[in-house]
Image 1: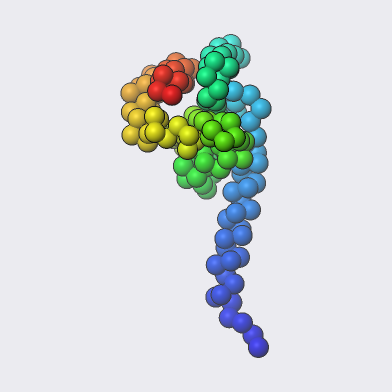
Image 2: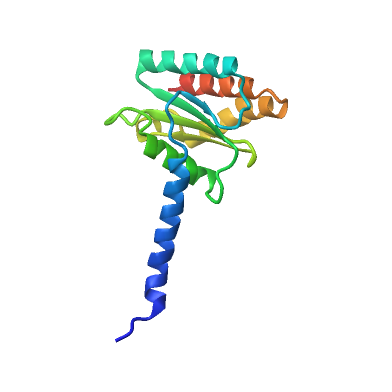
Length: 159
């Protein structure tokens, strides 16, 4: 007996979306505290921010990681950020105390993805305030390094 195609189509579509997400996120493997795949930051700017993030992690165990990419492609910035944070294991196992600050420059999107262990102190509302008051004004002025540094410092202060 032939089964209708409509039963298998949602499964096939879900598998295709999952494969596309995995491939996109696989390209976002993080090996540093600051990863700039856009060439926006100078090496000195990236190193300065990275040193602050490393020192914060050493003193608190909370990990704040920054990723700049050109675009999230077909994925919403929220989905992309979640998948990158999950795939890279940001934060300590059992504490889930990691934060990803994601900037997609061509999409003009910024996302602060927070591990479950920090959701009580770094809420979605506070993350939005940090983006609107610390990051976005500096980005509009062309000061990407200043916006990222101010955003990272606000995240560290909150956590």
